[in-house]
Amino acid sequence: MLPGDGLPARRAAGAAGARVLRRDLEVDLLFFDTTSTYWETDTLPEELWDEPAGDVGEREEPALVEAAQRRYSKHSKDHRPDLPQVVVGMAVTRKGIPVRMWTFPGNASDQQIIRKVRDDLRGWNLARVIWVLDRGFTSERNRRYLQRGGGHYIVGEKLRSDSKEAAAALSRQGRYHTVEGNLRVKQVRVDDGTYRDRFVICHNPERAERDRVVREQILGRLRQEIHHADGLPPTRRAELYGALATKPAYKRFLRRTPTGKLRIDRTTVAREAKLDGKFLLRTSDESLSPADIAHGYKALYEAERGWRDVKHIIDMRPVYHRREDRIETHVQLCWLALLLLRVAETEANDTWRNIRNELDRMHLVTLATSEGTVAQRTELTAHQRQIIKALKLPEPQLFFDFAPSEQPNS
Image 1 (cartoon, one colour):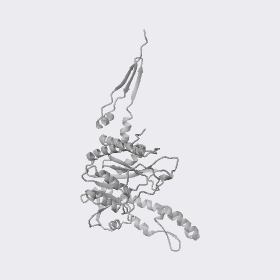
Image 2 (cartoon, one colour):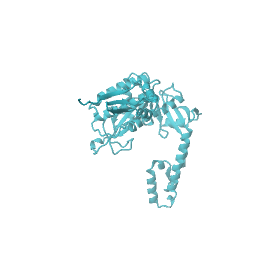
Image 3 (cartoon, helix red, strand yellow):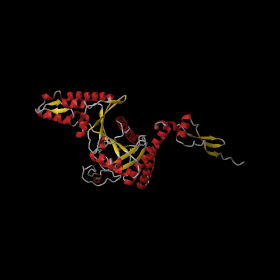
Image 4 (tube, helix red, strand yellow):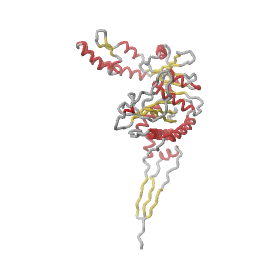
C-alpha cells in the first residue's frame, strides 16, 4: 500500500534530486517536458470538469500550485479525454538522470507549469541553467521569466506559428554548415534589442525526403477524393468539403474557389515544401555555438525516453487512486524507479533491458537431500559479475539457508 501522505515523499525526492543534479549537471543543460496520465474511474463526477488552468496572457493570474487533482481535459496527450488525468512534469540532465517530477491538476497549462518549475528549482542554488524545452512551452512571457537571475533557454519554435520573428528568421538567406552527416545548421539574428534572441535553423536532408514523400501521399489521396467533385450538386460538394476539412492532413492543402469548386492549394504546397526537414530553435545564450544549440535540443530526447520508460517499463498505468496524496505518492515512486533505472544504465554502461535480462538469469535453488535442504544461488556469469562490480554492490552470498533433516529417535 502506498504511504498516505505525499508531502514527505515529495520533500525527500526533491532533496535527492538536488544532490543528483549538482553532481551530474556538468554543462548547465536541464531538459524539461510534461506528459499526462489518466486514471481509471467508473463514474464521471461533474466536479472533475473545471475551467482550464491555462495561460491567460500577460495579466496577473493565480500562482499554480502543485497538486495531484484529477481533472478532465480536452487536451489529453494520451488521447483519452473520456478519463480524468493529471499532468506530470519531469526535469532530466543531459545524461538522462531524472532530478525531479512534479504533479499538477489535469487541466494545467504547459505555459503556466514552466514558471512554477523554475521557481521550485531556484532554491537549489544552481549556478547557471540553460533550459531546453519543446515548442509547447514557448511564449514571450515564459522566455523572459526563464531569463530572470541570469538563466537562459533553448526552445523549439513552431514553423507555422504567427510569430513575425520566426517568419523573418526563416526568410533570411544564409549558408548552412554541416555539423553531422544528417544535420545542417544556419544561424540567424532577428532581435537586436534588449533581449537578443538567436535563431538556429536546422535542416535534416533525410527527414526532408521523408516529409516530401508523406506530403505526396496525402496529395495523392486528396486528389482521389475530389476528382469527381465538380460534377456534384453544390450541396453535396459543400458536404464533401466539410468532411475533408475535418481531417487536418487534408484541410491544410484543400481550398474552395469562389464558385465552390474544390482544388488543391498550390500556394500552401509550395510553402510547405520549403519547410521540409527543418526545425527552428530560439536561444538567449550567447556562449553556445549553433552546433551546440542543435545538439542540445536533440538531447531533449532523453526526457521523452524517460516518459516512455515510465509508461511502458515501470508501468505507471493502470492506476485507480482517488485521493490526491496517493496519486502524488504513486508518481513519486515511479520517479524513484526511473532514477534507479537510469543510474544503473549509466554506471553499467548498458541498457536496462540487457541489465535486467542478465540478472534475471541468477536464481536461488533449493536442494533437498536425505541430510536436509540447502538454498544456494547459481554461479555468477562473467557479465553478472561485471554488472555487480559496476554498480558497486556486494556479490550475493552463495548459501542462504541450511535445514538439516530431523533424524528419527533410535
